[in-house]
Image 1: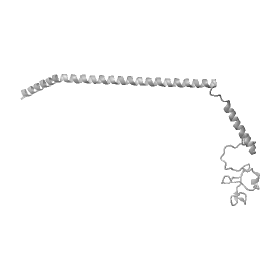
Image 2 (image 1 turned 45 degrees about the vertical axis):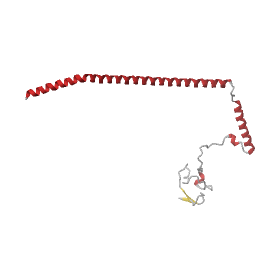
Image 3 (image 1 turned 90 degrees about the horizontal axis):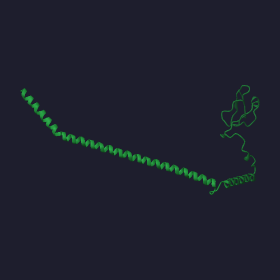
Image 4 (image 1 turned 60 degrees about the vertical axis):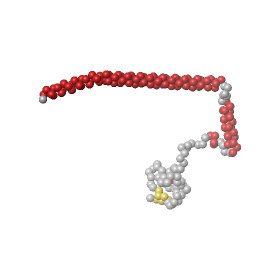
Length: 181
């Protein structure tokens, strides 16, 4: 390998590595290093591509409005023109008493009122449905309580009969046990 002293400005001489025809020599390992002298020999025949540290994606020329503003007066005039254009744009807007604007606002108000009416109707419907469900639930609970009371009354009414049946059964069982002895 050959080395050329002073080719790069970052330190001692860098080795020049051989490369294939049509390819540029390898760039230094540190991006952003720019040669301070023109290379000679094989490296001089290849176009030098310098790496930049810029992270900007805008690689094109600056906008035309910036290109022609070379003096303070030019920038000042451009600023005044921009302010004037903004003012004209603002003045071109329709005022609060413009018929078109009034129509649009009336249409918006109508839409808002219709939306609020629909929401109120839905809320009333939800409340009515909740009230109906609560009434049905209360009716079912009352019916269940009535059935339970009826069942208990039936049990109380049947208790003397059940006690009589048990007494008769007990007496017959005792009589059968006594006859076996």
